[in-house]
Image 1 (spheres, rainbow, N blue to C red):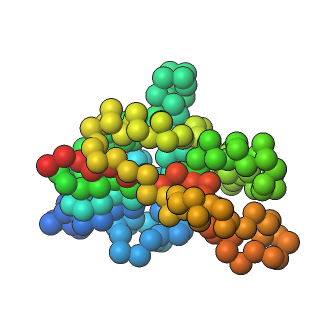
Image 2: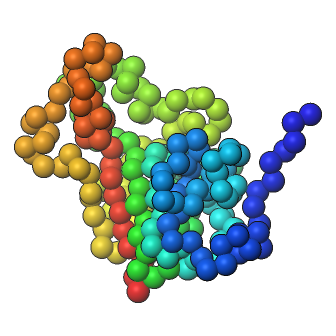
Image 3: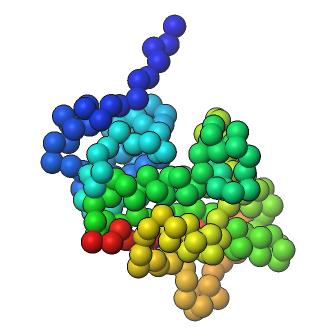
Length: 215
């Protein structure tokens, strides 16, 4: 029988990081970003802290510089439109944002990348990108129960929920934000082998957003 992975405790985290954590990545899985401590709800040799993002085993103000969440926030539910059962079982976007705020030190930054619903639907209407790609961005990969998208964000969602959680200095930091860059995007499907800069078109469809915990 496979041994069940046990989530980290606050005592274990304090023993391993007695001086706190400089930079934390949540939901890193098997693709961790270098230079971060990595937390995930699924066990992996590359995960440093096994934990649920809704209730991290970290003291208040423990992460000094930054928390990074790339393609994680879409896996949580709308805080108002989802059912009580969904909110309890899966958690909400606002619940996770408040937890990030709690563990960040004053002056620390929360940075997220998540599918941008407005841009995805616009591209679908204009048939700019293949539907199978747009569908995967919308619903997730469905590789397991954690790989399902429960809410796709808009810029307005980010402004509202980051503010409600307490973050300030809110910014859209998408690298494909300037009109000149958007005009020059190559919409050719990468499967056709004619687009070696497809990553820029993907980035256009993501919401890069950050906020700071007040000092």
